[in-house]
Amino acid sequence: MTDRRDNGGTDDLEAALRGAGLRITRQRRVILAILAGGDDHPDALALFRRAARQDPSISLSTVYRTMKVLEERGAIQRHTFEGGPARFEPADGVHHDHLIDLDSGEVIEFRSERIEKLQDEIARELGYEIVSHRLELYGRRRK
Amino acid sequence: MTDRRDNGGTDDLEAALRGAGLRITRQRRVILAILAGGDDHPDALALFRRAARQDPSISLSTVYRTMKVLEERGAIQRHTFEGGPARFEPADGVHHDHLIDLDSGEVIEFRSERIEKLQDEIARELGYEIVSHRLELYGRRRK
DNA sequence: GATAATAATGCAAATCATTTGCAAAAAGAA
DNA sequence: TTCTTTTTGCAAATGATTTGCATTATTATC
Image 1 (tube, rainbow over the protein chains, first blue to last red):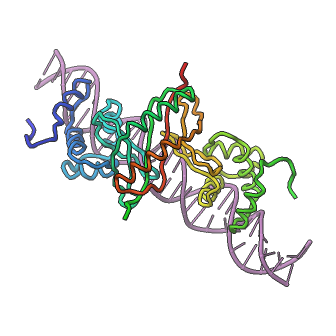
Image 2: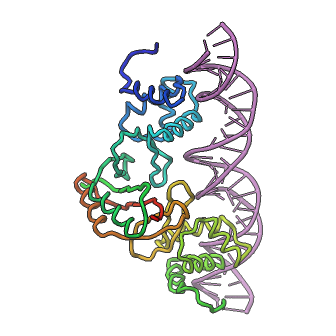
Image 3: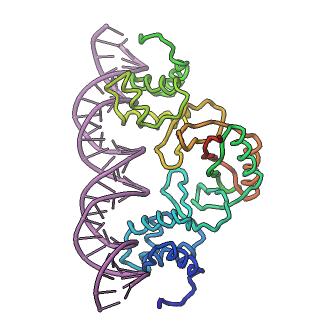
């Protein structure tokens, strides 16, 4: 059995993934724990570096491959903010949009029922059905 | 003097760019005309192919370089929709957001004063000042 | 219009983020 | 433990975009 320190509640996720036919490898377990543990939106390289601290043998390809699999299974969400590389966050189920701090790169999550509703209206008026959307605000702290 | 067929009103833009210290080269003139002429959102390669029809000597690097310069001067806008390469559109001055048809790749422009206002409110509440934003709806035609 | 100074071009090579082929290693089922 | 199949690490490939450099073209000037 692996160690029993708090893993941020990844056990059930692991079970779900295993149930979906995925193998829970040492590297996947490490990555899952990092995702569940952090509250930021790391990119593949950041994830790789953090993972490498726990398991120096892990490779960047594995991080990318794992991200792809997790995304397909709906376990994480991938965001590609202006400019930079893709950044990931565990899918908590509740949809939200993002405000990116242009100075620090920090990502703040928010949610607006009213905006969501307006988006639907607009799409409908144009004869479309929304499959997904992306709303990102880029700004700086007001002093 | 070059030919005098309709150029979609690029003359004033050319003048403005020249005034900003830019040289209006044969290739830039071609690219400008294409941008002004089409009402879609072509990517660099599409732009390159269209330009090559009028001037086979043009290179893809020049297209990229021109896009960068035009963007810096505010003459065009660059959009990077999910997945694909950057796509460009002449900056008409009026801000708008985009609805991308997932089946055809077609881009429909729209504008919602109410959404803009809500975005400002949200940013303000979070202690931020919006510098730019991006709102993209991805959907399919409702049948 | 000729000329000089400087910006822009084409090409190939470089870069960045990400993906992929492949042989070796590990996971899960039996 | 054994077998089958997935996953891994590594290196090489990819796709989009950028860049170095020698050459060419544009524009201000005479």
